[in-house]
Length: 346
Image (tube, rainbow, N blue to C red):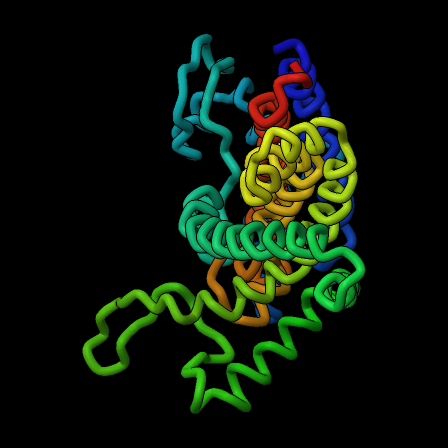
């Protein structure tokens, strides 16, 4: 419990650092107000927009105002609470202090709340990441166990070679190759599209329908690298565990190979694998930007890239903050999972 509390405390220190880094990075990229009104906008309109978006304030003040908006504990005027439609509990006079739902501001382009924009895109990213991770875990662990059992055979050597290729190839490169080969060259045989989201609109009826086949190529592409890492870690860990005394004891008791491998050896070999799984799952959730963009998958990644193109900073900063929270949360959950898998960690 103390370890978990320490990690939560460190997370609270990390998030302001993430905010500061992203805020500083975007300061040199154009003028959002000019982008909103276009090149023909008059000075008065530009000044009004800059005032509304706090762009007329010094940079340090812009940052503090943003931190105040996204912080659960913050100070706001009565006008601010009404204007931003803040949800929470506030006390005080004209200036109120309160506990609220973090306010990620509104998109510069669509005028939607950033929270609503991200909430709409998050389920698609979750489904993509979960599918990719299930694929990577199942085949990665299976391949790793098989390689360990068949050490130094052609199966083991082929597995190692394939894993090295999978780890070495950048995800965006694999995505382009997979999209071109299976979505274009072999489209008549596979039926897969180069781009497509989880839901599509029927051009004739205008109805929205589920298109599960669009999930296959991006999930496969996203799962290739973690599969390769998991396979190698499982193989290495299994080879180490299979040399332990308790494995020889299990065989001496007359247990079958299947029981020894999957009931005893694999469970003790899973700790480094769990580390890889949780780390990669967090990365898949938070960093599938290129994959989603290449395959036209309407998730957090595609929303963020589109927002970057339009200098829509609230959406970009909201997405980065959400990604950081996801990464931290999954790593904390990993610690809990370790203690379940291996009681010695307690």
